[in-house]
Image (cartoon, rainbow, N blue to C red):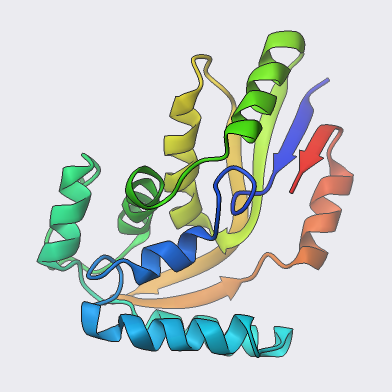
Length: 199
């Protein structure tokens, strides 16, 4: 019988909030002159806001994100070796978001060493059929890139997938489809036979 290990991403496998770091990095997702505006929105939401304000925060953040891949963003992604399927000037899409996730993990964040030890421990001492599920409120394509890079830390091939908030890309614009809220995470956890859940 398959067993599942359910992990959160932000503040569990990495120290901090990855989306904030990606949006705060000048000319990656957001032009340098709009970074202060993003930080202002973020502060308004997470310091003074309520859960009702989250949709508006996401919408306004998406409006700040460049509609097309800038030369500067392409250069950053190229430095990390994750720009192979990306062209300067193309509309932002899932592939671009995944590459930004890889860049965020490699250049902007530190992974949590304790979580790595736990994953290694599970593989060393448990010989069943295991799948890691990274359950997150973060955006699926972005988080997929981040986790893909994280999973390279392990010598053994691990079966894994991400379940998170879904977004739609259309003509360079980004639209929120479905948010993976805390309430929606509970049924996912209950459905699975767990070895453990972290986060």
